[in-house]
Length: 181
Image 1 (cartoon, rainbow, N blue to C red):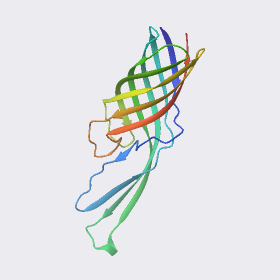
Image 2 (cartoon, rainbow, N blue to C red; image 1 turned 30 degrees about the horizontal axis):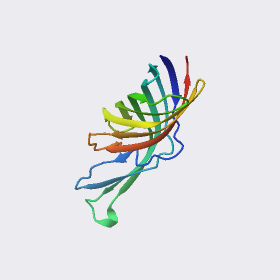
Image 3 (cartoon, rainbow, N blue to C red; image 1 turned 90 degrees about the horizontal axis):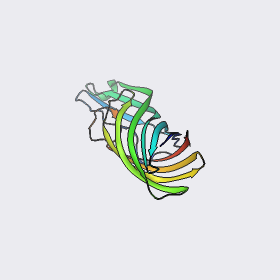
Image 4 (cartoon, helix red, strand yellow; image 1 turned 180 degrees about the vertical axis):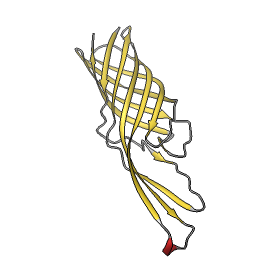
């Protein structure tokens, strides 16, 4: 059994929207939200390796979020309508727990597994937990250092009426780990 920690920087943009708007409109006003693309995702996780095959992890990922909300009052005729735009900057947090099986042996090994997002929070949004996740990739070990490019798929079953993550989310992550023992 060994302990490890890792940092998950995502320098590329996610494959699909990581945050989306589902804000409803009423008969007296029309509201819309435009979400800025997310440029990175950072995280830290810790876990244990059991029998050189199973890795049990718990982590937290952070992502900055920025969006603009525009509300137009449509009760008045066009020359007298008012439009208000506000910009919001915030954060999005995810806390996944997962179990991964490390296939084969040697310094380069594929892995696959799954788990659940036990907590998710987006500024001015709603909590959408739990959500199942599936993941897989390749792990390259060199001494106590490990590099893990991976693909992650997350499905949020709840529908939201606010700023939230979309129902399906795909990510490409690169993890760097240091084995403590």
